[in-house]
Length: 120
Image 1 (tube, rainbow, N blue to C red):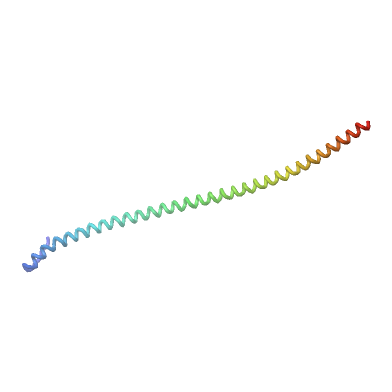
Image 2: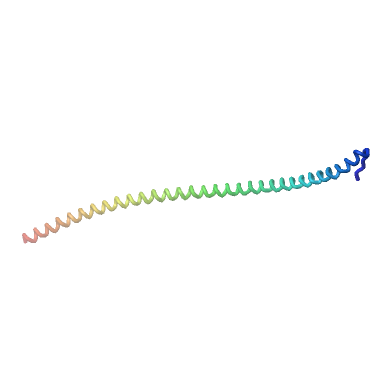
């Protein structure tokens, strides 16, 4: 309970002001509670954001590592394929050259057989 001593003129004015002051005080308390709730929510949201960011960073690192491994494996496979292709080309050329030589030798043998047959 509020007790006050004022002259009659001041008393009438103070009686009008006091309810306004009480109302303002109540509103300030209410706003302070809201501010406290907002700060709690903000802090909680910041913590959750940081947690999610850390998780995403970890996932990105893992993906980056996996992509590097896949890139290395593909690069090695391409090199192997190129080497295999080059080896195949070399072998094919050698086989072709051998077949040409065998064909030439076969022609010589045929010619030799014809000549021998004619002489006989």
